[in-house]
Length: 610
Ligand SMILES: [Mn+2]
Image 1 (tube, protein in one colour):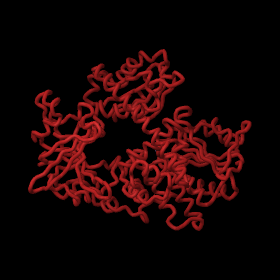
Image 2 (tube, helix red, strand yellow):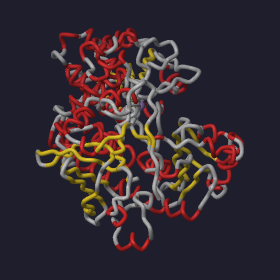
Image 3 (cartoon, helix red, strand yellow):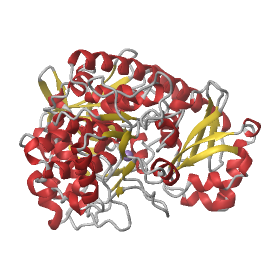
Image 4 (cartoon, protein in one colour):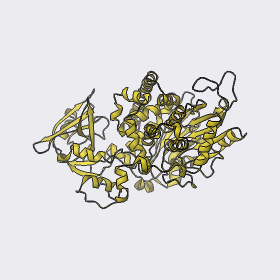
């Protein structure tokens, strides 16, 4: 079936046939005022003053006092690819000043869950059980912690912060970027750009970004303790977090991502280097996709299938021996994760086809599915079907746990609160992403309960359907095409790529440009890969020379069987039959640089053929 595409609407006037750079800027709404700073962020002048963050003065004073008094400082961070680099920034800071009285803690994603849990910290606070003690980097026993700093969490933990500060022995500094609730925790200080009373201009920093601002503020007050340019070398960690935490890459975040990528390419951290090399990636060639597809998943898998400490140890390791051992372990765990997700996805697709459901919510589950990977499954399912998705499985203790993801217009937390109380043992999250635990007595009626809740909150299905928006990520699955520009195949070359590269790094808020490529005459089509799963198309003619286009996992799933197939038999005999007819109107895809053995070429990464 042929598909249609349209040009992205352009918030700024620009000639669609004009200069490509102008067109790409205009499509992103980048006008004259932002243009220069967007194209060439300036590290010396582009960062905001960290002291514009509310409570920064108090925070810096308290930390410096703690260092002065040799207090035991506890860094409590989230377990993901934002919280862990944030904690690693503090690790680097304390290591640089050789401060040993510091410890690092991350909760367990599955046992404890997100946020601050006071009862886990007994050992750190000196309430030592027999034989348990907290030691510093040199192995020396630490006194009870008197200062705790949260990273990427804590803003909604009013009760735990109250309990921790109750006897006056521990000061808690909350640093976070999540949206504060109606009541702020009664902490010693709270650094969060999203505080209503915070005047900091960049509201969308990630948790590591906030941690970075604090370290910058500290360094500015302790100047002579640090080598020149010290804070710049922390940007590899900030860059990883900024590009994996789905914050918009505009404003200060663009600067952090831009220089983050630059520093990553020169990183000296054994952990990052080992992780890259063990995945056949040279740090100097890292691009944003390598963070999204190689680095971040391997940091995150530690908390999903092992413990976050593994990834923290990797990021902070000072030894190549240790780092390459951890990198190898993380790769193995990540392979196990991939197999688990792939198996579940296969079963899920089959189940969805069998259900043939027109219901507005996709509820799917299986007691054999492992809850730790269901967030990843839910993300893939919503991409494939464009419906709010609840996926459940059963853990080793017999609990029915799962993950939910939603489209822009449906709040899943609201939905979970609209079902009768007894259905969920536990529920939580944000409008578009959450987790839950279903009571075993209600697992069979779970689907129906969610559909009813949806009707209750959003009205009947027929009213809902026209409003269900297809999330922008489905561009990748071929359900909807909005292209940045229409280009001619003859213009695809290194010069064009250098223009596209000017706007990188791409990500949320600055999506990688998608093109409709005209005049691509398929002279050669072939399948390659272990099982012939990938597609390569070759264009060549006298005028425009040769251009290659590839699509990985072309043969997987039916949505990617592109081109105008006249009969199924043709497809069975030759899966490339339709493509070879050259009846397509355009190739939809990204332009990328392919690096191999020191050489490189510019090619098309196919999203679709229409
Ligand atoms: Mn975060």
